[in-house]
Amino acid sequence: QVKLVESGGGLVQAGGSLRLSCAASGRTFSMYTMGWFRQAPGKEREFVAAITWISGYTYYADSVKGRFTISRDMGKNMVYLQMNSLKPEDTAVYYCAAVERYGGRSAEAFDDWGQGTQVTVSS
Image 1: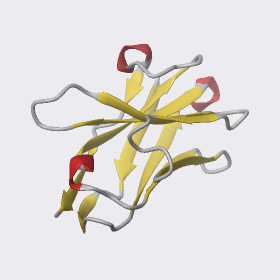
Image 2: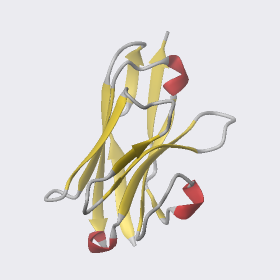
Image 3: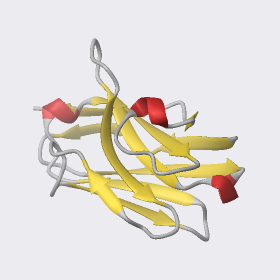
C-alpha cells in the first residue's frame, strides 16, 4: 500500500494559479501510475491528469489540457499539479492516487488514495 498526502489547496481568484503537492510513502517502489482526480459537490469523481512514475509519460483531461501540468520528483517521492488560468468550474476536492500498473483515466483503476485537498476558485 502507498500512503498519499495532498497539500497546496486553497482559495484563488479566477485566472490565478495553484500548485498541489502529493507526498508518497510506503510501498513507493510499486508505484507505476500517479494520478490527480477531482470531485465537485454533487458530481462524480473525475480524472484530471496522470503520469507514469518511471518514464514520465503524462496525459490529461481535455478540460485542463494546456492549463494544468503534472510532474514528479522521483528522489523525493512527490507528485505535483501546477494549475494555471483557473476557472470557477475547477472548484473541487482534488485527490492524488496511485496504482501498480498503467492506470488510464478511470478512478476505479487506482488502488491508493489520499484524503484530498480543497481548491476553490472565485469568479
